[in-house]
Length: 310
Picture 1 (cartoon, rainbow, N blue to C red):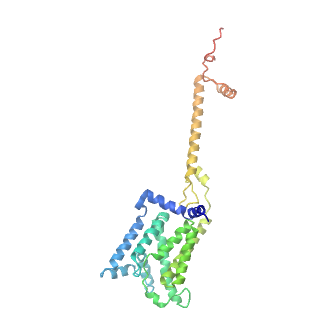
Picture 2 (cartoon, rainbow, N blue to C red):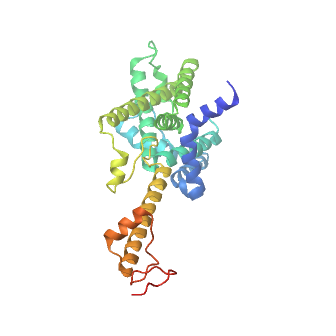
Picture 3 (cartoon, one colour):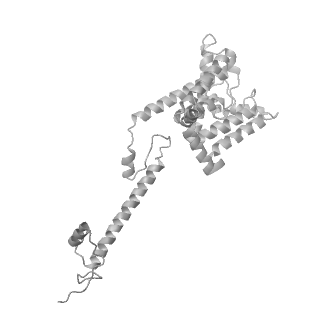
């Protein structure tokens, strides 16, 4: 495969997403990702506080999730558990994940959908841990009872879920498949709680994407030209935002301007002929014959011709 083919493949795979992110960052800069910056700051604050002698216990009570906790307590702690860094991993990894993946998702999806998808992915991993411990270590999907004591925090499940959802939504099929295969490979090589929770997050996102795709196909397709002519917004199915192609809008505007100028020119010609006293029928016939009455005076004599004596 030559370089041109690789460029076309890369443009097809990442072009829409890269263009959306670039345009937002150029237009708003850091203002395009306020939720992501707040998430990075919150993660850094939790990391600093939990490493203090007085701060470890409060952070654990706010955002620490374990499979042995009651359901209601785990559900209350799950939202903040996204931003509590794991104790056995470097904090810069969590900060980089939040900054890059959350930032791209916030621009591509919006902040509220990004938070919702991140919460669903994290919740899927948390609930799977309880089910896997109940199944037991004899099954491929199960976990040993000791996994109930593992502290389950960090943004990794949310990051995996957002990566799958965003790549699916922007039709980056190769990247989406690569993320899914990477998570499955991680669970096979290292079948611990974290690896299997990532697979659970991927499964939840695939179910969510499949449901959205089914709902989208059930909805009637909109006619771009009909909506545009009726004064409604022109939509396009190529981009998730539904924005119409700019080239079509420009062509329509140029066509309308040309029609308006043509109508104005015709009205001006009719006004000039009315002032000169030329009947419409005569003017039309002369125009078809190639004659011009614009220089003919009221007496019917063309300018420059000798006057006829009576």
